Amino acid sequence: MADVVRTPRNYLIEIRGELGDQFCVLFAPMTLHRDVGTTVLTGPVRDQSQLLGLIGTIQELGCELVSFQQVTDPDLPPPATRPDIRSAPARPGA
Image 1 (cartoon, rainbow, N blue to C red):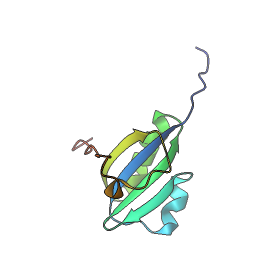
Image 2: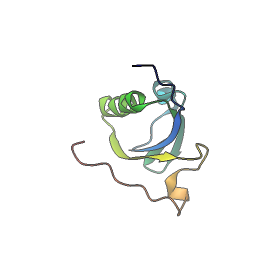
Image 3: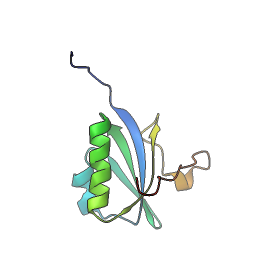
Image 4: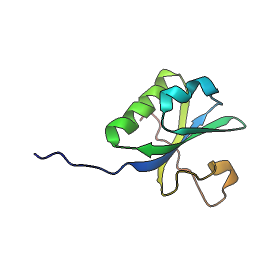
C-alpha cells in the first residue's frame, strides 16, 4: 500500500486543571490556553496516532480529559469565552 500524505487537522483539547508553562514541551507544537480551572490545547495534529499520543500524555499526567474536537481555526480562544462552541464531553472509560 502506498504512503498517504495527510494534511494536519487542527484540534481543541480541553483538560481539567491548569497546566503550567513547563508542560508546553510535552504538547508541542500545540498552544496552551489557561482559564480558571481548565487548560485548552489548540493546534495541528497530523494523524490519529499523534492524537492518541496526546491523550496518553494527558492520562500519564493524571489529568482529566474534558473534551476534544476538530476545529477549523487553531487560533480560536478557549471554549469558555466562546458561546458558539459547545464541547462534547469525553466518553467515560475511553
